[in-house]
Image (tube, rainbow over all chains, first blue to last red; front, side, top):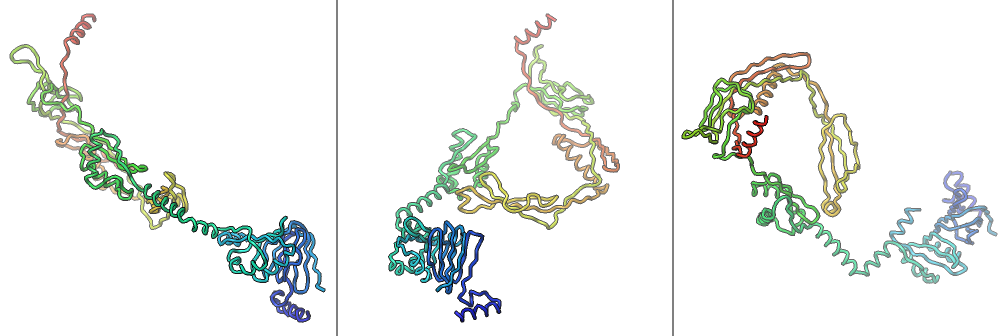
Length: 92
Length: 407
């Protein structure tokens, strides 16, 4: 955890993408239609109105409707649908 | 994404349905094994997703271990695999294509248009003797060669055109018309003047000369009469007139020539234009239709060996050569010579072959724009022309007499 924070700080100082050096996830949202999450560890939940994505230190909960996973591989997951809420919970 | 989907459509992909309630775990296992999944969708039976055919083959063991069964295999590679199994069907299609190509390239019979059956048969025999036999491929038929051959063999043909239409070789023929109004030697005839002239010389072998040397005659006037008095009786009889009547004729000409003339000179600039030709219509593909203000244009057809024969589609390459118009001044001597040449060209067309020039008078003039030539030419030429004469029927003669009496 501490080591990850150090890598994240180093990435910020060197102005290089954070997810390349650290285990932090990278999330991009295109309007309320599409969410792209990189550096993920898999799905925790997948329902039509809710998708949960596990990352190294957090769990991202996306709520909305008509969810469809456009693509998933070991690096990124693309979630499509009508996004209403995104919640990031720390793992306990 | 669309290229990704298109690529997978070509390579083939497998749709898998997970009915297990713990499907998130299954998806995670697959993605951790570096299997790319897409279009994951929740439905009534569970969750369906797509994986590429290559991944399916590569990780078949893992997929089998998780107890997943493909519901559908889609894509071009699967379709082609199906065709591989139907060898007879493929062979049939290939045979069909080859036979279609072969038959569409064959000409089966010759049709002769524009002449009677006997000549048609002769044409077919001539072609057969020269190695043009049916059926024959279109590429082996040289239309120009056929036309030349028929022109050589049949002197009576005025016009010959050969072309392939569908599976027929059509030969269009136009025969020369027989020369009419040839006056036979024993047909009664008179000689009349074809021009206004002054009689210069008359040589009469047969018939009665009705003009004298020095007489002025007009066009259509009788020169030698085909009716002569019978020596033994008072009756008149009709004879074929024979003789040559020479007359002096005068031709007046007024010819003008421009002092400044426009001439076109080609520059080195050229531009191309390409058309696609479907049936008889041309559609432009590349290039401008009128790239230069003044130009000369030439074009040639480009045929694609097999495609053009089957579909009739060909390409046309047009080339524009730029031309510049410039003005040149013509000097007086050149203009005089040119006008004289024009004058004699016209005179030859108007006179007979044996005409002789007696005297010429030229008068040159000029103004700001033109050079002028006024000329009078005196010529001696044969002015006679034979015309057929007919005896008057007795009944007609009676009728004419009756009309005269009534008057």
